[in-house]
Image 1 (cartoon, rainbow, N blue to C red):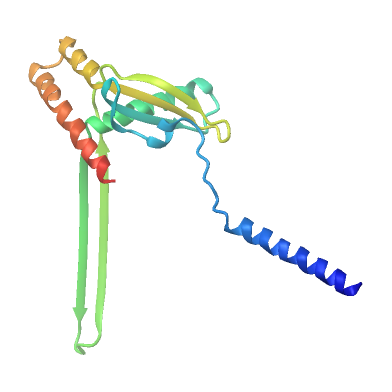
Image 2: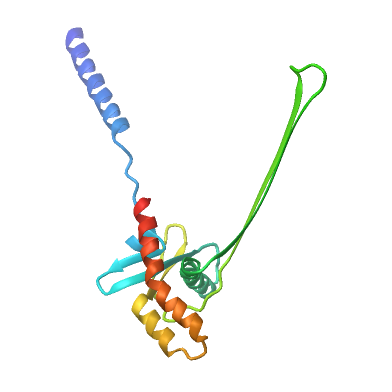
Length: 189
C-alpha cells in the first residue's frame, strides 16, 4: 500500500515539476495594442498612393477630452514639421586638467563636460491631415496620425501665392530628396 502511494506521489511530483518548468520556460509574449501605425511611428513611407510623411502624436493625463485630442493632433503635425525642417543648435564645453606636484606618482585630475542641445522647427504644413486617431482604453493615451502626401504638398505649394518663389522652388526640388534620405536612414536602423 505504501509503495502504491509512493508511486502516485512520485508521478504527481514529476507532473508538477514538468508543469512548473513548462510555465517558466515559456517566453512572455509582448502584446501590442492598437493600430500598426502607433508602433511604426513617424517617418517617410512609400504606400500605394505614393510617398507620404507620417507623424504620430500622443497625449495622456489630460482629463478634458477636447484638449487631449487637440494636443495629440498638434503633436502629430509637429512630428512632420520636425521631419521636414529642424534647426539644431549645439553647445559643448569640455574642460580637463591634470596637475602633478613634486612626486610624479601623485597627480590631481579634474574634468568637467557640459553638453546643451536645442532644437527648433518652424514650417507651414500645406496638405497635412489627421487621418486616424486611437484611444488606448487601458492607459488613457490618445494617439493621432497625421499624413502629408508628397504630391498634395507639392500642389499646395504651387497654389500658395504668399510664398517667395525661391523658397517654393527650393522646397519643391528638395522634398523628394529629403524623402529619399529619410528612407535610407530608416533602412539602416
